[in-house]
Each structure stands twice: as structure tokens, then as C-alpha cells.
Amino acid sequence: MKTNAYLSFRPRALGCALALAFSMSAQAAVSEQDAARLGKDLTPVGAEKAASKDGSIPAWDGGLSKVPAGWKPGRLDPYAADKPLYSVDASNLDKYADRLPPGQAALIKAYKGYKLDVYPTRRSCPAPDLVAERSKKNATFAKIGDDGWRLEQAHTAGVPFPIPKSGVEVLWNYKTRYTGLGRRAQIAALMPEKDGSIVELRQWAFELYPFNDPKTSTLKDVEGIDSKLLFDVLSPPSRAGEGYLIHAYIDKPQDAWIYFPGQRRVRRSPTFAYDNPIAGFDNLYFVDQINMFTGAPDRYDLKLVGKKEMLVPYNSYKLIDKKNKFKDMLGTEYVKRDFMRYENHRVWVVEATVKGDKRHSFAKRVFYIDEDSWALLHVDMYDAKGNLWRVQEGSLWAAPDVGACMSYEYQIYDLVARRYVTDNWTAEGEVLDLTAGKEGRVNAGTFSQDELRRRGER
Image (cartoon, rainbow, N blue to C red; front, side, top):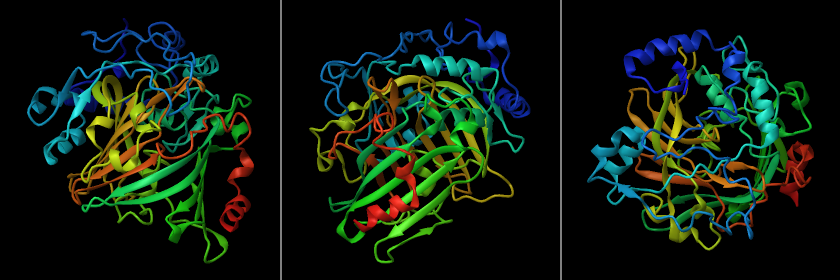
């Protein structure tokens, strides 16, 4: 198989030279010859179609594209019969360290009993025909702006950069990955306490992704919108009625509005972005950690390190299983290991370093992004002294009714405070409504200031 320089993980010395090449070519589209690989030795969205050399990663065969009988999110695990192949813990960490993000290794070292149960790799993520068609067009068309981070041109409903050459291109693939037009869910953010109690923030979450609308074609059609999010707080009673509205853009930092019942008005919130803390979680959780990463990446220089086989969360159906209760899933120090599934997959590694003229509490982040779905599965976050500070772990599961893999549940571990937070957990909520955008239960009107006020006053 033909392998380009940017399709391999390289040693550090060579990586520095490659990073310079990536930076210089950030705005250059790939050749027609390279684009022709899509659907051949590369999947329609740019992953390597072939199996890994040792066979631990199988060849991609189209993913979970047919809807199984009885399928509803949280009601069926298509891989329930799988058994772990092995576990990684403190006793054998050295053997598998090269396949773990530093954050996972740190968690294994920090917490007694923390381990990764590794299951057979299932390349479950499908690629709908329209996504495949638009992604191939984008390979020679999509472009990053001169400022180094804006998505300047791309065909919608497809991966902008299926054969990426830079870190910012990989990040835009994540931000615009296909997950359907819009969805709604009852979600919970959970913070376990040392005494065994759990602080819970339950809310309705509404999401709209205009970029994924098959009726659109260009960025002009989506009016510069990356995504729209609305959160309607249900509990605890002291916060019921609060609301948060976010408009994230393709070419500028996001806008946000907040509704507080006591004030009975919607106000713009310039502070609901970047590293501002989310209320109620003891400074353990920043705004731009929502959905693993949200908002503009304009405060960071993004370097594409390369691609590497790693053990990452995958096919996380246990986390959404409606039979499970939060109290049974959460330990005082970490998510109980029986509810986590890890697999060996190829991921893109992107290093984000704060620009010299910008500031952020995380001086460096390292993103690990799945090649098959472009989902962000893991983030390591470092302080200004270069110390590993927080570890964020995502999830992934295929939704055949949408024709895509979903990223919902995630957890944030603070290695300094030795505490953690989970968010977007849905096991105890209503069944996920993944087709709400397609079927009109979520639309542009859902994400207005008037709707934010109406929901708070009801």
C-alpha cells in the first residue's frame, strides 16, 4: 500500500521536520492522485482500509451500516458476546506503554485497581454515500484561511480534509464529523464525592449540526455555523430553569447566552467560552471541554504529530445501557472498569500549544482522534510548567439508524485534585433521539434567545 509521510507515526526528530512541512502546507489541497485513493486503499473518509500488520486491527468492511432488529440507543449492544483479550494494569504497564496516551498510563499509576480491559477491535463506524461523495470532493477543495485556523471553504456533509496535512485540518475533521443533522437527549453531568455521594446536574441537551445537512452544499448555506447547542437544566432543584445557548462558528469564536430564573432575562455571556469554569463542578471542568472540545481553536498552534496504533475507548455500549444506574457505574476515584471497553485502533495525534500572544489554563493539549470516525477519544492536558494536569476520555459507539458513530459520554480526571467529572451520560435519561434534526424535533428555531427564555419560564 502506498504510504504518504503524513500517514505514519514518526520518531521525534523526524516529527519536528514533518511538523514544519505540515505548517507550511496547511492550506494546500491534496493532488487528484492522492484523492483517488479514497474508497480504494483508504476508506471514503480517509482511514486506512487495510488491517494492521499484526492483524489486531481488522480491515474496514463498511462498518455497522444495517439496523439490527430491536435497535435503539441503550437497548442493544451488537458486541455483547465479546470477551476481553487482555487487561492493562500496573503489573504490565511497561509492556503496553507505547500504545497508551500518557494520561492513561498516569491514571493506572495513580489509582489502585484502575485498568483497561482490551476487547477485539471492531471497526463499526460506517460512511454514508453522501459523506463519501462530499469527502472525496473536499480532498482537493477544502481550505484553511490565512489566519491558520478558520475553515474557509469546504463542501458540507463530508469530511473537509480526508487526507490531512496539518493539525488544524484534523481538528476540523473532528468538529464537522458526520453525526446526523441534530439530536436531543436527557444528559447528566456527575461529580462523585469521596463519601460516595454524587453531585448531579441533569439537563435536556439539544444539538444542531448544519454542516451535516444533506440539503446544504457550501459554507455559505450554513451561514458560518459550526454547531448550535442548548442546555436546559432540570436538576438539582436549586438550578432548575437555568439555560445555556451556544452558537459555535466556522470563522470566529463562539457566542453564548445564559438564562437565570431569578433574573428572568437572557444575557449574553462573553465568559462562557475557552477555560472559564462550568458552574457547580469545583473548577474541575472548563467550557471548551464540552463534548471533548468545543469552540474556536484560535488560541493554539496545532501540530500534526502523526498516526499511531493506540488503546482507546471504543464501542462503548455499556455506558448507554438503560439497565445501568449511575450509582453502580461510578467509583469514588474513577468510572468502574466493568463499564469501559477499550480496543486497538489507529488514531491521529495532534499537539496543541498555546500561542505566544494568547493565554489558556492548559498550556498544551494532546488530542487523539479516531481515523474511522474522526471522533476525539482522548485528550491529555498540561499546565504551564509542562506537568500532566488533566485527562479527558471520550466514548464511541455506532448508531446504524443514523449511519454514523456517536460520541456522547466522557469523563475528566484531574490528577492534581484527584477528582473526576463525567458528562453527557444518558443511561438514566430518556432514549437518545438521534434523528431529531432530520425529523424536525430540533431545528434552527430551537436555538434562539426566545426559546432559551421560554424554556426557563415554563
